Image 1 (cartoon, one colour):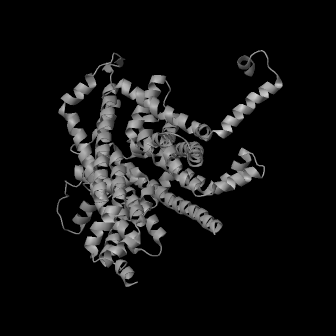
Image 2 (spheres, chains in turn cyan, blue):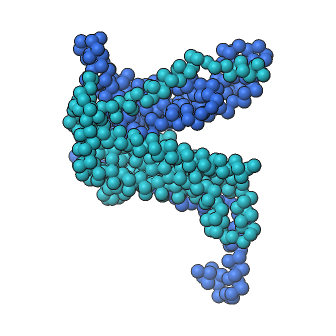
Amino acid sequence: MSEVSYIDRPNRTLAVYAIAYLLFLYIPVLFLPLFSFNDAIYVAFPLKGFTTKWYEQLFNNEPMFAALLNSVQVGAVTATVSTLLGVFAAKAVTRYRMPGKNPVVGFIMLPLVIPGIIFGVALLILMSRLGVPLSLYTVTLGHIIVCVPFSMATLIPRFEGFDKSIEEASADLGENMFGTFWRVTLPMVFPGLVASFLLCFTISFDEFIMAFFLSGTEPTLPIFIWNQLRFPQRVPGVLALGTIILVISFAVVFFAQWIRNVGIHDKTKRGM
Amino acid sequence: MSTTTVGTHVTPSNVNRTRDRITAMFLGNEALRGYTLLSPTLVVMAIGILVPFAILLTMSFWTQVAFEFDTTPSLNNYAKALEHPVYETLLWRSIMISGACSIATVLLSYPMAYYVAFHVKRYKMLWIILMTLPFWTSYLLRVFAWKVILGFNGVINSGLKSVGIIEQPMEFLLYSPTAVVITLAHAWAAFAILPIYVSLEKIDRSLLEAATDLGDGPVARFFRITLPLSLPGIIAATLIIFIPTVGDYVTPALLGGPDGIMMANMIQAMFGKVNDWPMGAALSVGMMVTVAVFAITFMFVSRKATEQIG
């Protein structure tokens, strides 16, 4: 018993380090909201005074709203398609013994280990050779390819986490394949679906380099932000936009975490 | 459909039997069912990965002539890439910056992951969320935040100036490889913390007790038990950061300056203002191969090292 407490003895140095590290992670990000309320174009100390005018300007910024809408559309389609493809793949991989499964899964996971710029360039060349004009559709296609591995990686543990015999029981009791999927499998993996959807949406919403190569005349939000950064007088507006994105994404992360926990608690209850 | 295959003596029972056989084969063969279910994903990914990469590779053997492509295959682009030192410099710089960033991030994140895995008892989940939360905000804005901090009139310079520590802004902060390394180490921190945390959390605590019982002090125990067992997490973290950061475009473009631009910026220029797509394709292929060689060598060496310890 004393050995355990010896191993687990609180380590003050480490605790201080951990706090310092958290500060290193947060402080740069928190400068965005700080300066978004600062009444000056240039981002510099000393602070000039409190203002909300950058936010007011933002709400009258038509191109920003257009870019936001584009990003939401691309993100929603990307997340839906990637999650669907991820469900098929995750179920196949976890439920059936298949020869050559590992190389196939490895192949699907390839986008995780290839720099995004290479994908952007390769798809750009393909689209131009096929004569397909660049648009939000080409961006969406690129994002789907990058997101499927993430969706699969999120869903596989979900499928592994529940007992195959429940599905078999449903089949024995007369449900066909689709009935079983709809009434048994789907409700059980639902939290995983939500997690996968949110993850893919976030990745797509935040993705810059592929959209940089693959978008046509309609920019996604990151491309819009990138274009703003070239003009110093637009920077405070970007900071205000960044602050709003920050708040929303924090809220979404907490929601996603909550959804995941709901699922996990259900599972342990069922297991007992 | 079945009439052509079965022949003229088609009876309903015959058709049924064929159908039954197909159904039986389908239901009986697990692998076939698995692959049928996997096929939509596999087809999309095959089209999305193989076709673009095939055309990327093909184009790297073409030559740009004014606004047209000369499609006769040649190694011109690769020869040019080897001849001009600028490409080699950029590639090496990309590898060095991204290598330095991977090592720095892993070193900085390890104690953090260690603290949460071994010393945080309650609210573990809260700590994990806190560590990963900044990573969910826009990548572009996280990188831009560092420009705000390190800039000529940025937070550090204007802050130090307003409290009177320095007279003139320090210029070396922004537009340097160091700025790129710091920014990337911040932007990718979550990717190091999580794998290392997972590998530390998995370590069987009784091994540590055994080591203590057998007379190991905290330092010996760390180097003989904890560190070797967390190697998989360290290896994963290094690769997860190294591979994408080699091809990073945003950070060097915003913070790198002339001495800090990387391969991705050159590739982008080839597809942009330089307008030499085949050269850009060749550079992309070159970068991909280099990254793969480094990643595979690293994996091989670290596996050997792990085996030695084990």
